[in-house]
Image (tube, rainbow, N blue to C red; front, side, top):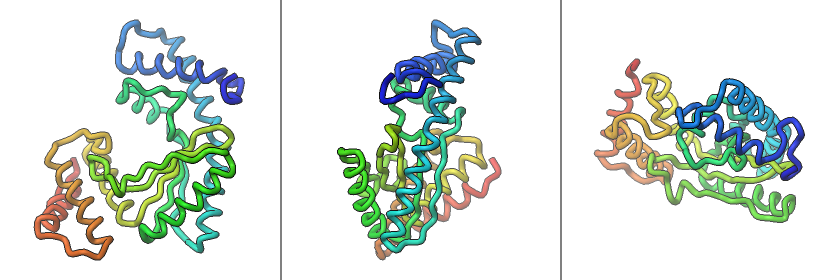
Length: 239
């Protein structure tokens, strides 16, 4: 079996094929899978998802240890991606291979400053190199923000041969992400995935820039302050 895959879901090839079955069913692609095939695929995916629980717990404890050694008390959380969320990601990303999805298990720490983030990244990645004999992959969305305006550091690591994503944010970056989540909840529009009016996305990007500028102790422009005001008005809508 691939990478020590438990018998509960077979091999990673079985996981890959189950993901394709669900994608065809969700996107109404031919040939359409039968109800039995879809049920079996969901059972395989659920078993694969569950196999990330223990690795996620280990990652959470590893991250908590790094924070403690750095003398930091922060907001720390973890989550297993729910089956509907996995299915939605498969639908949105037609080339996504479920067996290589990197964020089925995820931890997040919210820190006071970017300096604290950098310290935790250095310690966590050093521990990973010792544990796995290979370096973690780090995506720096602070130096190069996502098109949406999202900023954070993502570490893609492995525990017990399972891929786990670790997100490190400052409080300002986490506040921005929560505004996007709130907009999605209030309007029913998935702004996080790029849906919705471009005007709102422009305001979100401006807000991300505003928070970044403020985080570095710089004075924001009048335009950026105006963007924050307009975005607050949009967020207050009930959809």
